[in-house]
Image: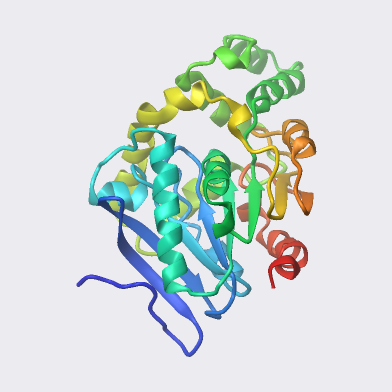
Length: 318
């Protein structure tokens, strides 16, 4: 039976899980909120194809103050499970995101949309803001990707590993100039660096794998689709990401701009994020360091994230 958006499960609560037609294909969308008049938190996941819809515990927590929207992008997760169609390029994902934004506006008339871009999703969401700025009340970046992210992360990881012969030997197999890395080398370094910080939740073992194995309704077919989508999407758009011109990110916006940065993020380190944040002009901007967090800081420390989001952003859009 075809589902519609949204479906009320209590007097003021909203819950929806299903496929919506977006630019010619059926794409998976999840919506959860405890009050239908709360602003929407529209999350653009990273990857490519690392869907966040399995983070059900954090989503329920955020849904106390926001109506949370997860979207498995073209080539990712349950969208890939429905039809293994790959994005032609980053703009395809931007177009899909903007098409879904229009549907959300139709389903929630008068409700403000806060756009959140995480990791590689921070590139897609940044471009969405530039192409439809009036559609969003604020832009939140977490794990902001910049032109210097990989290089600074590599330099720091190499420094931290100097007393470990095997780690240093492995790192020295990579070219020193991160701008020359292949997609495979980027993926290898990302996993390696994430595993080095044992004092914060690990992106791979503590967040993705744990939630993939325990997410409600995620059966073996959906799990395999997630993994296959990761591989296929990386092959499809990683070459464009490798050569992405970060000068395309906005340097000025007319909406509030807030960055959440994990205190010990080995993939998108603070120094790189700070450099981009400093150059952006916005009517309101704030960079917030999330304690005891690495990559995916808003899932590793959801209570802090929600408290700061409601403190910094909610008053601006109410």
